[in-house]
Image 1 (cartoon, helix red, strand yellow):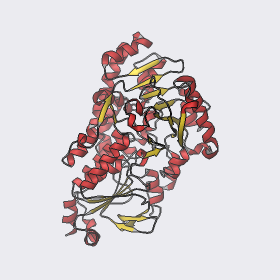
Image 2 (cartoon, rainbow, N blue to C red):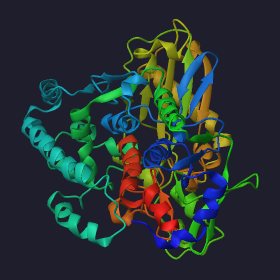
Image 3 (cartoon, helix red, strand yellow):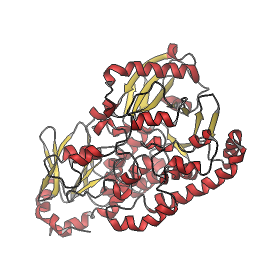
Image 4 (cartoon, rainbow, N blue to C red):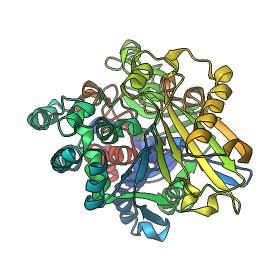
Length: 516
């Protein structure tokens, strides 16, 4: 895998940085941290550069008035992917992180007040299905078989495989057709369920990764099996505790994380990535560069000085970006013990609301919400007798034209009223701390193009080979990880994107041999 053309300046790079080849990772989201650990395990000296004042990217942690709020991911699935990273460092995940399973995984509250609990227990799941439509029990059994088969192909076999070659696509195409990957998730679910509430309960998962269930490829039906196979987990101390554990592994490898270090440009010479330039003007030479930045930002901004043939500004402008998110973090001076750890509080519309968000780019008056109450299982995240909350509303990205600086507070107040009317009676009198995150924050703070929360939308023709590749199509020695590249968003996806690097990045020994 070694590229002989890398030899021209690697001696000079190492003379300034030490004996080991140097890898620079842009961004400290889960994809970037996992990439750094894997590169460190393969002999690289690694520097992770983070724009913010603390690691995590979308998994940043806010601490305010005695409350701890995870900024982003709160549902941890496929923990074996994290266990692998600890094993690479000769340790166990449990050495550093207290990860606990939760069952039921979450509860779905429909607009009429009825609830569906999603669980790992097949018997309990059948009972939940029967509450809404006993005739759909056979369909449920068949759907779980289909989900398992899709999981086996799309996740076990393909998620950690590089997709930059057409050969990989050609090999996967027959399974794509056979498993109905050309269908949408919602269309696939409708083959098994007749009850509309059950169709919603088994098709909403793409929203967790930025996709529209009515256009996201049916390959994402694998999530139903993924959840039941590995469970749903939370980390004591919040998801930020998992970020902290990964940073500890990087530092134990002798490698470095630098915060407040924004990259302004990837340095390219002779069509190869040779390092990065920071906004301060400082330049860091590197043998390889891995970008965990937003993929459209990487190509449109960090490579703006380099002529691009594939990911041109025109192509980036024409791409379909995921929806964004409005997130309200708040703490209360009392506990709401009737509220579960994860609750979906759905509104009166499903398809029509998603059309507003994804197609019309219109901020609707109604909404469906994800309510996170981590203090249900971890009281340490709030002062005694208090609760910490995070409520998320999918909203259109910034092409909607909404001025969130003007509309943000009114939208928050509407969400507060909705929660008070449904699952949190008395909420308005109990709030003691509050903060917001809007699509403008995704754009300005996280440098996500259009303020999209999950980079490119996971449609069929923006997935696998059609998605930006982990091996850059534009320049050599540049690699990409994170939500915008293969296999996609969500913790299993971004951590798997780092695993792809094992297949496409030469080992440190190969780089050194090529330089001789």
